[in-house]
Amino acid sequence: MDAAKEQFTELYECHHGDVWRYVARRVGASEVGDVVADVFLVAWRRLEDVPVGSALPWLYGVARLVLANEARGRRRWQELTLRVAAEPDQTVQVDHADGVVSQRDVAVAFDRLSAGDQEILRLVAWERLAPTEAAAALGQSRATFAMRLMRARRRLRRQLTVAGDGAGRTSSAAPSMSNWGG
Image (cartoon, rainbow, N blue to C red; front, side, top):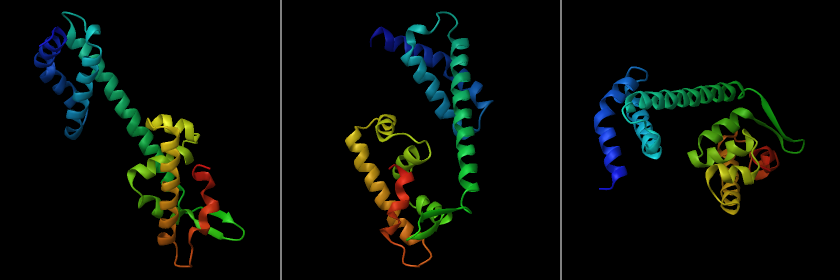
């Protein structure tokens, strides 16, 4: 085993229990393992920054930052959920020829999509990222993202037909998709 692996193994074996207890006093039991894993991932990546003789306080500092990031993420998710929940009663104009598709229909159709399709559509519609930016956020090429976006829009259109009130809405809802990424 090389020196870095030995150093990390010793760090982990000496302080895992302490870090686990530190995190467990701050989050629910279901989250502890993930947070502790993130702490030790940071420790592995920044092994040269771990101070000799005072590794535990450094690990507690890392844990504090990981917990803060988790809390921020939860807060953002809750805010997004509240925003989405407040919108279903509003209506969206498809265009004058096609009539109106209620946002409730859109929300129902959106919920039926896969998590991957939802994320793609969120990036372009809610986060207002350009396709190039959204592709970078997902670690994909522009071409791959464009194809996935096209397919996600197509699946959303199909779901809008299913979610509709049976009035025969079909892919004619396509013009309304412009706010879903162009």
